[in-house]
Length: 177
Image 1 (cartoon, helix red, strand yellow):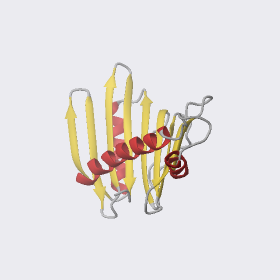
Image 2 (tube, rainbow, N blue to C red):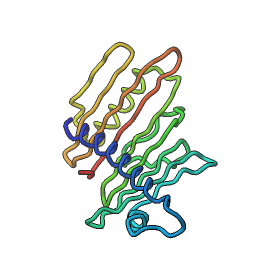
Image 3 (cartoon, rainbow, N blue to C red):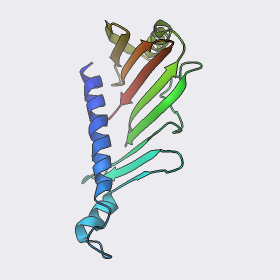
Image 4 (cartoon, rainbow, N blue to C red):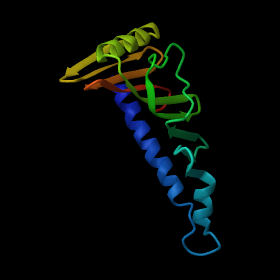
């Protein structure tokens, strides 16, 4: 489970770094960009699509490794093999971070399905994908399960039931160190 925490933390850092990479691309000094502004613009970009609200970011580090992020309700869902969106669930947000062979998918969902059904659905998928679901926490209306596969794939699913709606977040990552 340590890798799941690290993967989630890395995603947070990647999103923050990608966000900051784009902050320096605006030329505040006049018509001619400074050398530093040109370097930042060449290394990273960040934009928000006004029509869809999708956020896109790209950053290339000193080693030449490029990290990309797409986040939004209409970002196409491409989960790793063996995982699927819960039937009938509505995608509230999809964040996808890719780096070399690494991938992190954070999917926010809503469903009228009972929390227990969604947890069981994702537990079965995780176990079929070779994930050792070693963590299971239940606290009030919230349940969280998580684990890791021998290939380094980390998995977590957190769901909360409020009234007639189950809100959930699915996180699957691999290869982001």
